[in-house]
Image (tube, one colour):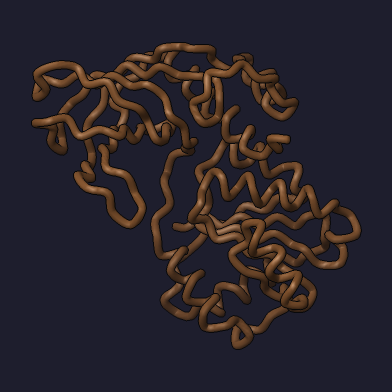
Amino acid sequence: MRKVLVVKNRSQLDVGRFLAQFRESLGPQAPDFQSDVLDSLAEVPQWFAKHASPSLAFVDWGQESRKAVDPKHLEQALNGMRTLDPHLSLILLTEAMPESQETMHWLDRGATGLLARDFTPGQVTDALAEILGRKLAVERPRHARVPGHHKVILRAASLEQGVVSETLNIGTGGLFARTIPEGAKTGDRVDFELHLTTGIGGNDTQIEVPAAVRRVNEESGVGLPKGQILRGSGFIVWIRRTPAAGLAEGLGLQFDHLDDDARKTLDHFIMAHRVRAFIPLS
């Protein structure tokens, strides 16, 4: 089952009708998908804070949305979604296909493509259908993740000594460590010590916590961790020994044990940082 996110963006988009057309356009081999529907862009950061990235996201940008929403808010939402998942397909839905200059504007700001929302199956271009079909065919991560460089120490019976490395991303279910310890193999049980920093990219600089992040913290009762150390154990589920397709070498660690306090801290850390991806840096 693939997750599809639809953001109505204050429009009267008939989501059921649109999704039926979309499913038909992909043909009989299209995978099953489940849709979540949001009324406005303001709901997007909170949704991404609590869910793994969808396989595909549609955002309405028809006349109703254009009248009600500042384009800068749309740019901010696209940037946040793209930050959290560079491979996410983001499709803007328009009344009719815009001029090429506007199309390029939105492609430059993170959209994968634009599509007339009242399209017929035959109007979906072969190129767009291929992209969408391929994206939906790929299983998305089942756990919410955030990119970030954080210190991690790994210890295992197969290793002569502990290995100090850095994470490239952390999720509620595991982490990716940029290291391949000599003797490590898939299936090894590993004890880890994860040193969390406060910045979204692992930056220790103390910065003002944005309002959206504060709301998440107030709801959860936990603030952003400051230099906290989480300890637990897990299993090596894959090893990439050489860089491939732009992906760094390293290993994937699936968490097996975290105590309740560490789990709570990690969950809120990831939630707050996924929200922060939608906050402009300037």
